[in-house]
Image 1 (cartoon, rainbow, N blue to C red):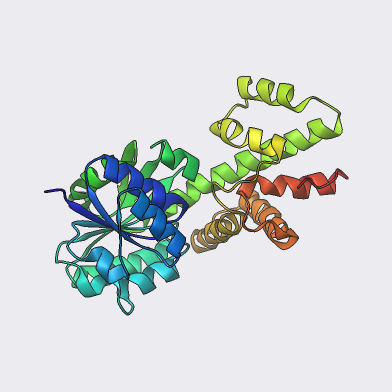
Image 2 (spheres, helix red, strand yellow):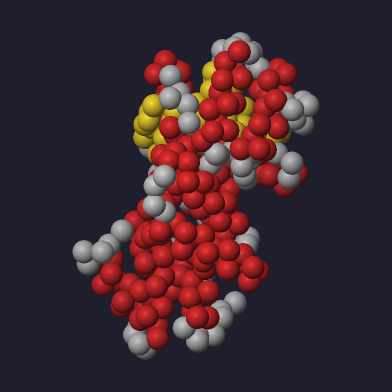
Length: 296
């Protein structure tokens, strides 16, 4: 009999998780507030359910893939939440980009209820998730991490334990911070090339082959050139993540120069009506500052 996995949040990432887990032979039952997402889950072979509690019922592992840690806490401990029906020993893997302190607090509270918790952040876009090209960066006990390996193997290409609960979330914010810098520098360079009248495809090809090359150039460079802002991650989410990273800078007393600038760019994009588009849509802000016309 196939082992059961619950998922709460079957959006851009959750759909990809469910797809790969179903392909790996697991039974997947999922909950989301969006009925369209539940219909997509059903079409892919999963079982839609009516609450987070139902998603956890009978499951060995449960994934949360949600916008922020406040929502994670509500679906886990609130009415009809995961904790109401979770069997003792359930492993809850929170793949959301959560506030590290919130993960630490939730993990401690769940331990008292016999629920094992990992802040199991993922690195990669939703497009990468569909290719099973994500990595998991987890915080939690070594025992819980090992017990979650079959789950992670089902939807990710690699998984790393970074330390105690909360360390996965901190690592994810550091990864994002470095991505912010890569994307900001790429967009700035492309806009300079546009202003200089260079042919964009040729410029990007050279950049991808030069010493400055990065995965960002492969994933986001074409989108920036073509104004293809179909979301693989949204401006609103990127702004939230940047603010979380800035909080950690204040918490630990670390300089956050690049992150501060990125947050301002994402905020400007948000205010210009680009909130639901891909995070690379901020290039339109730079184009505007350069006197170039906004693209639809």
